[in-house]
Length: 251
Image (cartoon, rainbow, N blue to C red; front, side):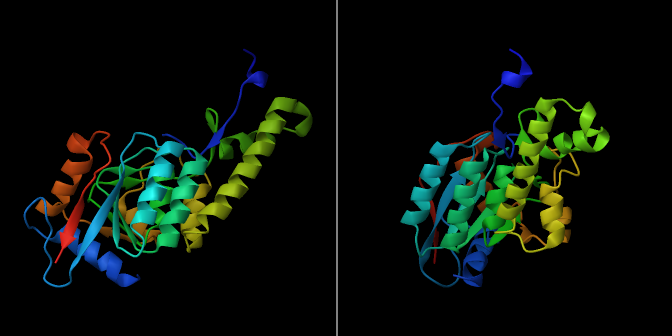
């Protein structure tokens, strides 16, 4: 099939207040029995919502949105373990997370691309020390949008074929669109530029220190019995897991 006739889909890769974050932060740091987290004060439960597929899709988005509606008014722990998604499921989940307002993200291993977009919508992100986030620069087919735009910069317009010009036009729209979306959730200009501009490959791992320097709301989650228990319930052996029909009791 001629490349001019391929279907090109745009994606971002496959590659309330302070109390909510404090409650779940304590949850990740305490060291009680593996099935129930007990804190000194209070009396509530912390539902767990997981996105633990290698890549997530609209079916996952429907499930997560439903779970968030069911947890309205409660602090929620969202466990993220994914390489990313298309733009639509990531944005839908991110907006629902921001609207809910009491979601803390927990990234034990990696939440790349669309997973990062969901994570930055949360009130706070807890990461195990070696965990990674990733760029959310848009991808069109096999190439990043930023790379496709370089074609028009590298050659005079008369030397560029129609297909490449059309793809560059799509890339320009994708970058502008994604930049607008990420600004809904990220305040610092450094973070917006770093996440969207395509200055590295799409699979580049953004470690905790870099995420912190960008102004993202990240904290280190201790590898405690409590956080280990959460991981084993949701993503055993670090592989794609199943939805965790469970919660952690906070007393």
